[in-house]
Length: 158
Image 1 (cartoon, rainbow, N blue to C red):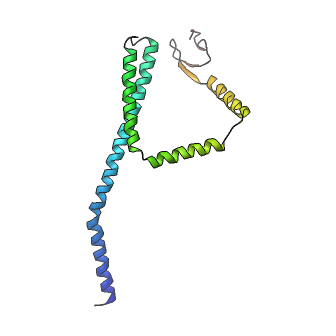
Image 2: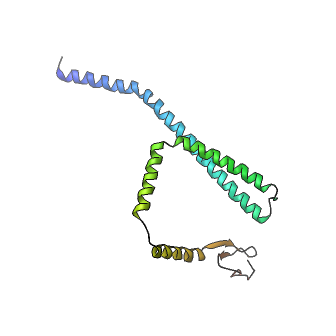
Image 3: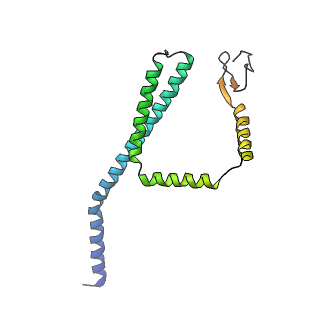
């Protein structure tokens, strides 16, 4: 036999071995995919609980939720949210949490701001907040700002 035919036979055997070994590697990937699906499901549930809490608080402020039901409903939602966060923490490896803590510690110690810089940042933030929209006028539906006491379009008191 020639040397070229030996290499050809070896190449075919290697390709056949890779082809036969491929299903074993997919099973490992499937476990990772299932775990990521579960994590994404938990994150979606966490977002739903947060939205429900915000809606409950908003409805309570509007008077749609009775005062005697509000604490119980809020406690149930908070308990469900805490349970979801505990489940999410189980999926997070401790090493990644340590990396995050180290990163936060490094950034906070490296960027010590003096009071003047902090005050300047707060003033910018307050100025930006004053120009933000607060929603819409209940009478005419035009947008209003946070600082508006009356609707600029129809004059209704806000």
